[in-house]
Length: 61
Image 1 (cartoon, rainbow, N blue to C red):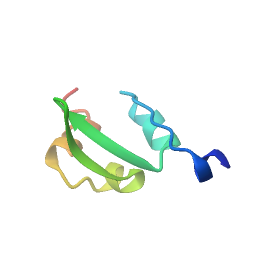
Image 2 (image 1 turned 30 degrees about the vertical axis):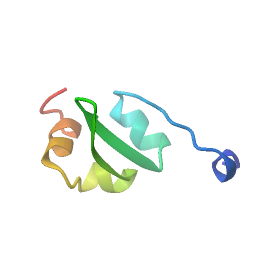
Image 3 (image 1 turned 135 degrees about the vertical axis):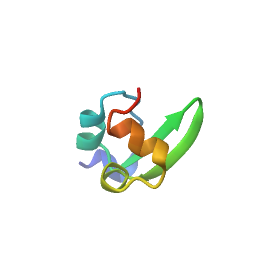
């Protein structure tokens, strides 16, 4: 975890389990626009945007 002290690592994935496991913050992008950016635990448990919730619950994508 020492890397976190000095570096930012960006991971782009469609694998929601991987994103939830390895990230501190998550951004949800749709059609090239950032829909939501928040701490990972918040985004996956109480997303602020209905489009984010629809994607992470498998209603589209």
